[in-house]
Amino acid sequence: MTEPAHRSGFACFVGRPNAGKSTLTNALVGTKVAITSNRPQTTRHTVRGIVHRPDAQLVLVDTPGLHKPRTLLGQRLNDVVRTTWAEVDVIGFCLPADQRTGPGDRFIAQELAHIKRTPKVAVVTKTDLVDARTLAERLVAVEALGRELGIEWAEIVPVSATEGRQVGLLAELLVPLLPEGPPLYPEGELTDEPEQVMVAELIREAALEGVRDELPHSIAVVVEEMLPREDRPADRPLLDIHAYIYIERPSQKGIVIGPKGRRLKEVGTTSRRHIEALLGTPVYLDLHVKVAKDWQRDPRQLRRLGF
Ligand SMILES: Nc1nc2c(ncn2[C@@H]2O[C@H](COP(=O)(O)OP(=O)(O)OP(=O)(O)O)[C@@H](O)[C@H]2O)c(=O)[nH]1
Image (tube, rainbow, N blue to C red):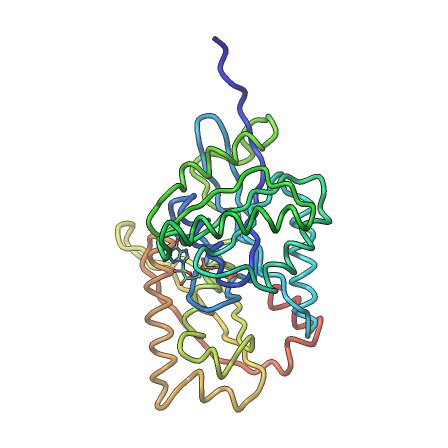
């Protein structure tokens, strides 16, 4: 018997904010690469996780949520999403099991219906949050949504990323939808997102914690420099990271820094812990807060801030 051909390609998960895309990416890849949170719209950059298997390599592209654009930033994000959709080999449409199909899902599904060539897999996420009967109803509703909009689901798969339920099955079902080809990335590589971008995401995540309502979308982070400290013994390395937290108005400074700088200190401690876990090396983190006026509306600033 001949071995089946090796397959490789790209997949992206789409879905309304909080649908569980990042968590699913992490569960498939097995390492924390994308940023998750219990609040919507934390995933701004295209973060790839790579599933290496003997028979296939699946490159996961994690896109930001598609949403009604109100600012230049919103428009850019939507463009990124559509470009990604047209380029991948398979799209996973994530719908949370614990919520009915809403206008947000419908909006995305309508957009998806225009992308004819790419196979679409409906992934019903967070199955651990519902009973069997509700899950069955959701699966039927998802099928009906596809029929109504003229989308032919290649598969409909219920998963729980946090419990690891059916995550392996999802990978099994995605692989045959990929084209035949050799691995696209060397083994061992989890993501091709530059480390600095991931570090910036971790800092941004920590900076937003607890102040999201006051500062929605007003925080951007740029890592200026990441350098190994010189004159350190080989067994005790230290990575110096210098980063700026950008806000839009001077009045927001107080919120980020907090009384007597306590909040900023917390942000530093939390993000340093996450960065150390990500990079596997001790880190010295130097954080500064800067005002970049109306950065969301200024193309030059947006580019500088990585959007
Ligand atoms: N119980 C349960 N919770 C989940 C599961 N998957 C994700 N969640 C939770 O749902 C929330 C949103 O998950 P994310 O993975 O950040 O969702 P997302 O779709 O990437 O969200 P955005 O980045 O906002 O687009 C987080 O609090 C997760 O812990 C799951 O399988 N079961």
